[in-house]
Image 1 (cartoon, rainbow, N blue to C red):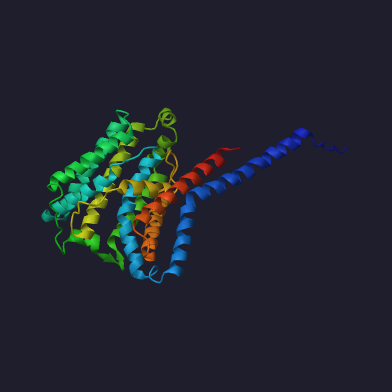
Image 2: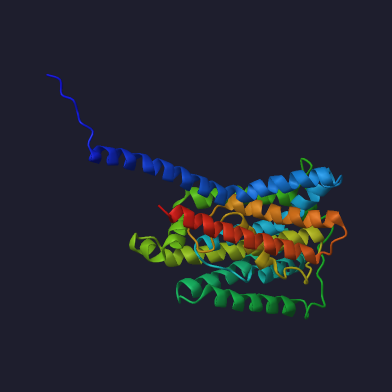
Length: 342
C-alpha cells in the first residue's frame, strides 16, 4: 500500500519559513557589503572621473604625492579605528601628532633611536593615561581626550618656547631617510603605512585581542559577562592610539625635515571622518582597518580634485568632506536599521 503524504498548512508554513531567512540573509549581506565597501566604490568612481577630466591627476608625481601625504593621516586613522570599534573617541590625536613631530625633530640631534623612542614614549604615555582614566575610572572619553588634547598642545608649546623654536632634522641622517627615502620607487612612509595596516588588520581580525575589541564595542556589559578583559582592552586601545599618533608625527617630521608646530589642527576630526567613511560604526562593534585606509584615500582624492579644479578655494575641501561625511553617516544609519528589520 502506497502512502501519500498530504501537504498540510503547517508544511507549507515550514517551507515558507525555510525560504525566508535566505532572502533576509541576502538582504543583510547586501546591506553589509554596501556599508563596508561603499567608500571603495566611491573612491574608484571619483578617481576614474578625475583621471578623465584632469591630465595631471593620474600622473606618477601626483599619485606619489597623494600617497605620501596620505600616509601620516592613515597611521592616525589606524589607531582611531581601534578606538571607535570599542565605542570610544579620541580628540587628542591631532595634538599628540604635533607633539610627536616636535619631540622627534628635537631628539634627532641625538640620533635616530632617540628621535623615534622619545615621541613613542611620551605619546604612548599620553594614550596610556587616557586609557586608564576611561577604563578604570569610567570617565567619558570625550572629556578625557579633550583634556589630553589641551595638555599635549601645552607640552608642545612649552618645548618650542610658545612655538617660536622650530627644531630641524639633520639632512642625510637615517631618520630623515625614513620620511624622504624611496624603496622600489615608492616613498618609505607608504611602505611603513602599508606594513602597519597589514599588522593592524591581523591584530583586529585574527587575534583574541581583536575579538575583545569587537566584543567591548558591541556590548560592554555582555563582554564582561563572557570574561573579556574590558578595562585592559580599552586601556591597550588608547595606548596603541597614542603610540601610532606619535609615530605618525615623527614620520611627518622626517618627511618635512623639521618639527612644524602649526600642523595637526583638526587632524582628529579628519581621522574620525576617514574611519566613519570607511564603514566603522560610531556606536562601536563593527569596523575594519582596510575601510579606514579607503576613507583616508577618498578624502585625499577629493582634496586633490578640488585643487585640480583651481577655481575653488581650499575651504571647499572642508565643505565637501563634511557633506560627504553626513551622507555616509545617514547611509550607515539606514543600512544598519535595514539589517535589523526582519
